[in-house]
Length: 177
Image (cartoon, rainbow, N blue to C red; front, side, top):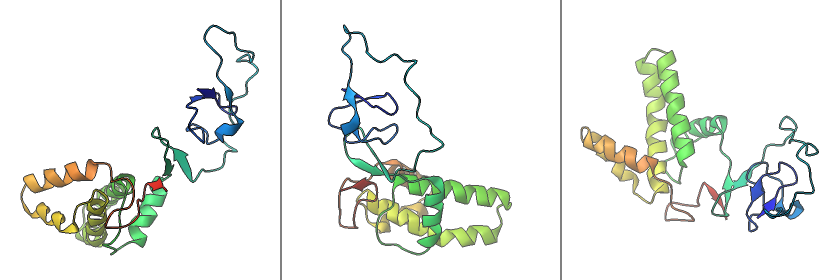
């Protein structure tokens, strides 16, 4: 274990970046042993300045793989730019942020038919891409036609983590290879 020079968090020796602040680990220092006193006093350490921190394109997951960051605005923008794209894969974060956005839009507009119809095609496309991410065919979306049971099965699948690496539907949208 080593300590990050920037934020002071303990990180694994095999990590290349600090999962907390994104600082390269090669600049870290070995962690003090429990029986030794730390040479650095906690009062001398300065906390990271989060206002000046640059947005990182990825972070290191506990499994050591690099994960692409996906914020709410990015997910919502992808939802509208991939309006009718039924090919490829979508992450869980993209799916649930977009689902939340559609829910809020419908809530603010009073569940109008216009808002629901405007979001129908992109929501189906996003659902199909989400099924592709877990290795299922988009035709499984037709399970939604089975009352209650179909919706429950789809929700369980949408909550699953996607398959790591490339599959028959495209590149992994989460991990950087």
